[in-house]
Image (tube, rainbow, N blue to C red; front, side):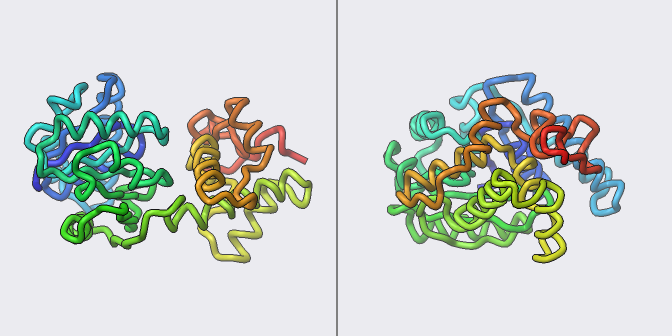
Length: 296
């Protein structure tokens, strides 16, 4: 189990690779794009540098952690000899199902296959493999090196032994694992996404502006950031995808995404990743500047 593979080198994938490598695991980071892998290594290096600057990590430990990460553009070569695979690809059902078919074919027979999905059914993912008992959800929070929670999701057929292994492994990473059952949105996003959606509806209906909504939630509810700012950080496309999973999976109209959210995603206003959502982000992420469209 000291050898792991991570599928996807984006924000979540490079964060997951970072924490495993820092805790002594050999990590195969897999992506179809070598430039994306190179960028991920650069991001991991910068994040490790921040830890060194804060005194929470030595320069030697940083070098050692980076040395434990290898990059691969093929699942077949990347998963050889691993005890665990964590899939952190785009939140797209068809893509994830294909990845798990490939993993089932190429990963060692006794390897655990985990998904970092934030809403897609683990049971559905497991059904395309011949090892449903070894398929589980490991939902890390963003930013992975900082956030302590790992939502561990048991599929319908996930074994007790695999669940216990993944709970223990999460603790080895310095995380706090919480076991939940496999229902749409699990716990984190079943509660969070309707709140974000309601904040967008509140804006859409003209009850209050972007800054006012976020200020109420920060100062009145002690949230570290407002729901609209958080939506920009998560990515409005991701928020929309999760709401659609909730709406379809639970069949309740209360999960229907706000038309404003749908329009913003269609227009490419995705939040931090695109430079504009409810706020503008071209200047960086330290100062909050409400997007021109939503200024009063």
